[in-house]
Image 1 (cartoon, rainbow, N blue to C red):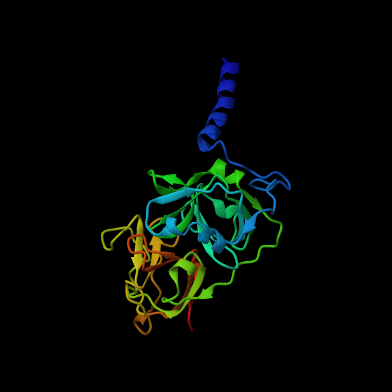
Image 2: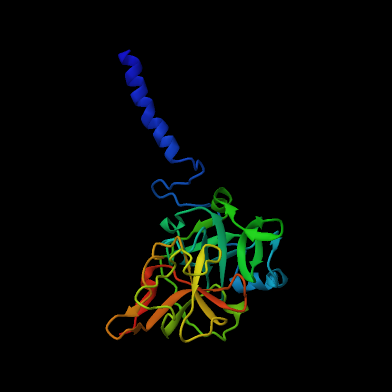
Length: 286
């Protein structure tokens, strides 16, 4: 009986560990081993702008995708990841010419795709498409749409370079800048304030007090019309419950600088939708 008892005690931790990790295709680095596919070379690299120019029609409307058959690659640095949950199962890569969103069915990518990390993405066999005219790389979703590729496929298609991590510097935001050229880029909005800031309202309360679109809340800015610019926050973001910047002494919204990814609004592609990556993306102007 004692032998059976001890055997049961030994098995329980194993069963518990198995229940905690059902994602069997997790790729974990060992020693100097990198995530991804270290056999990928620099051959066939084009700029992100050249990539977009190769597939201009696929971004004209939503629900389109095209399989990339050419043996081409892009190389750039990570500007947006899932570090605080406002960007979910996506990351953004930018080079000196343009930027593009990459869709991957994986959580915790910020653990190895840090802001400023340089990577090469081998595109042959992946799909490129438009999500509300926002260029994205991934796999087919709902037939003609563009969605997430699996984690195992993604790790076959990228390589982290040994270039030192160097965060990309944001460009100054201008609501009139060309959306086809600049969508996906890291930008900074200077001297703005949240229209809903009142000392109580939060970024994304997740209740009936605000309109929730796709699990997200769009906040307007006093300096722009709602049709021009909104700031989008997921109700699952780590900072969703933070109060919008408000000056309690002078009883008015605080003036801030906002850094984030400039994407196109899901319902109105002519509207800029700014994705804040983390709390420090909002700088109080003193």
